[in-house]
Image (tube, rainbow, N blue to C red):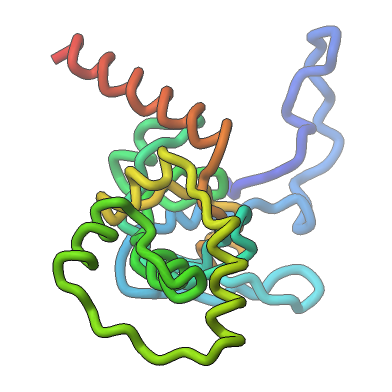
Length: 211
């Protein structure tokens, strides 16, 4: 029996069983899930209806992630899956699906921030820079004025700062790895970040009680 996306096998709204008046059709087919895992990139192409192609990612290790408040996007390494609203099994097996909450490497974003604002992203980094006393690279007056203007807006969320210290950022996947062959998404910030941190903490407490 093939996988079908038709709803002819479902009961009607009143609970009646629908009559079988035809067999399955090619345009109602479904395929096996991709179950994209973490690992060296492996993508298969699937020929689909209309001669189009889907890109079935079987393994991925990196993706493009947007930092919305700073209007920048960077390619970075995916470290692991930490939360999935639909199924905890997808967290345990590190399965990449749309909507999964993951951890990504913070290095590309830290490097961009420090180059853009010409100042460390964390207080710890500022202290280290002061101790080392790095030689200042000569900058023109124009560049210095631009950087001074940027520094006025260089504020960072305390929750994000903690993550930069650890070197890992929470992100959400917004692409569909099994359809597009990519694991792209955005960095969690503000209310959304607070919500998922609460979810992660409550999950850890439940596991502690069950253990």
